[in-house]
Length: 307
Image 1 (cartoon, helix red, strand yellow):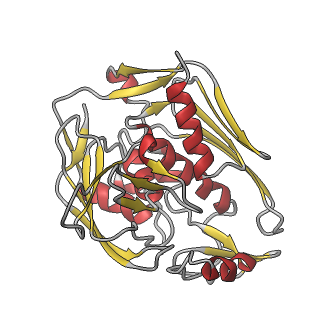
Image 2 (tube, helix red, strand yellow; image 1 turned 30 degrees about the horizontal axis):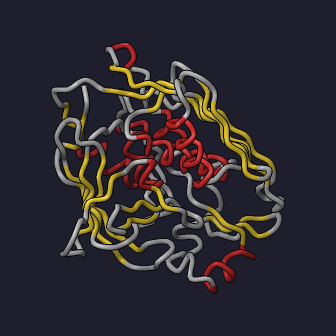
C-alpha cells in the first residue's frame, strides 16, 4: 500500500547556495497526492510546486523545481532521496524560503526524522514506473543510462583530479533500506580551489566546510573529522542520483548507471525516458513487487549513527 508520514516533521537550517534560513515541514498527504512543495512565504498566486521531472529548471550545482508561475524551490535532491529511500509516496512539504536546508550536507537527518515519526499506510496500491528498454544521454565525458531491472539499482563512476578523491566506483541495490544503510549519511563535497570562485559567483553562500560539506585539497581532506566513508564522494553522488530519480513521480524500477553524471544529466535522462516510445510503463505493484522497492521494511537500527 501507499504511505505517508504519520504526523508533521519539521527541520530548520540555512540553504547551501542562498545562505538563507528556512523552516521546512513534511506533512501527511492522502493517497495519490504524490510529493508537492508549498512556499508558505508567498501569499499571492500559485504557491504549489510539483516534485516531478518536468518541473525541473536548469540551475548550477543543485536541482531546482518551479511551477508555471515561476515559484521555485532549490536544492531538493537530498530531501527527495530521503523520501524515496524511506518509502514515502505522498507528502506535502511546506517551506518558508527558496531553498531546502542543507543541514549536515547529507540526507541522514531527514531519514531519521521520517523513520522516528513513522509511516501511515493508505488504502491504495503502490504504482511504479517500470523501465522497459535502455535509454542513455551524454554530455561531454559524462553519461547517464537507465536499463530494465527487477529492482532499483544504482551504479556510479566518478573521476576527479584531486588525489584524495581520484577514481571511485560503487554499485548498490536500493531495495529494502539499502539507501538508508549505505548512502544517507554521505555528505556533499567540493574542492578547496572551487569555494572562493563559487562564492564570488553568488553560489555556496551557506556553505560551511566541516559543518555541511566535505572539502578536499589535493591529496588530503581538509574538513575536521575527515570522511564518514573512504568512498564518501561516490556515495554522495549516488545519493544525489536517487534524489533526482525520485522526481519520476512514482517509484522507478530500473538500473541507473552514472558516469561523471550530475543533476542536469539525470534530469535529461528522465526526460528522454518519458518521451521515448515504449521505454517505460506504469505498473501496479503486487505484494512481492512492493518488497523490492526502496524503503520497504526499513527500521531505525539500519540508519547510520553519525555525529
